Amino acid sequence: MLKKLFRVKFIQSFFSWLISVYLKICYHTSIWRVKNLRNAQQVINSETSCIVCFWHGRLLMTPFCWNDNKKFSMLISSHPDGVLISKAVSYFGIKTIVGSSSKNKFSSFKNIIKEIKSNNAVGITPDGPRGPKRKVKEGIISLAKLTQVPILPLAFGSKFGKELNSWDKFLLISPFNKFVAVWGNPIHIKKNKDIKIAMKNLEKELNRITNLADNLSN
Image 1 (tube, helix red, strand yellow):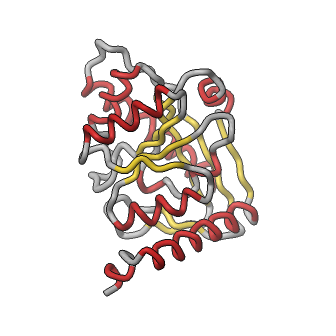
Image 2 (cartoon, one colour):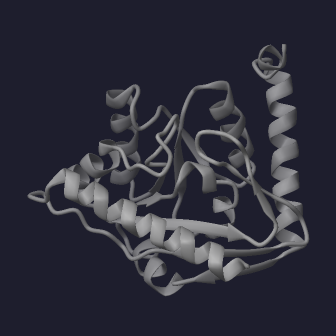
């Protein structure tokens, strides 16, 4: 019954609006810190595109890590959960590319490359939309090799939060909190780079900054 309700456009729109309002309340009532911003800004403020990546379970506060210097689009699945997220992030000026890192690859790649050629940034959850948790899939590496744009890892931690019993251990947050966002080091994937090694390197960096964000927020 609940799943059917969330497929109704009005219900989706209402709940996505509620989510956006709740996130804004959390942000404006909390302490917010950003680490390693200088390295990220050098890439973001450049005249080329970039691929911003973060674990699926840590995407909730990513809209607040961005600025208006470069347009930002996120790769989000067409699943009802994805539609809800898509509508919610639209309130932060974030555009959606429908697809995922595993399904509709051709269509997704085509639209992502279009954004990259326009020098816009693209956000991807490399373990989404269905996991396994914190395991990088091949798609993001292939995309970075093809386009030769850098990958910017991103993570956030919350002092008061609860991980859901979902495949991604999605982190729920509350107002009057302390949030720490950590930008990782830009990763450039050379055309002759082994894909499996690149996947492991990205996993390692994402896990490093996620653990750092958790430690700094507590």
